[in-house]
Image (cartoon, rainbow, N blue to C red; front, top):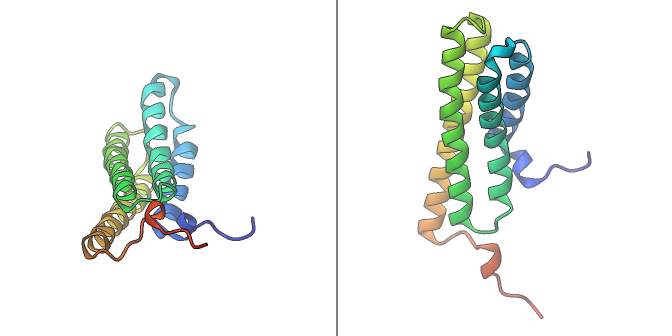
Length: 136
């Protein structure tokens, strides 16, 4: 892999990448009866990362903020699932703490990113891709 894409430089995306991998690894150990929970957790974990990527490519700050908000919502959903897994004894205390910490940090970073982009949007300092003038 040569250079990182812009979104890959974001710590929020890097955390989401790691979180998705950890969720897949841990949920592989769950009993078959938990297939629905496994699917939901994996979808939420993947959604965090994918929406950061998709929003980045939209070319509009308004759309990017909306996609980041979806990522944030997916983290919130996943945090609930992680807690449920601990309560239901599907994961141990150490796994719970590590996942909860990583997901919590990711939620915080997404929230701060959204706030920063809203400031840029309000100040008019963000130039949307589609609003750029084409130079002859």
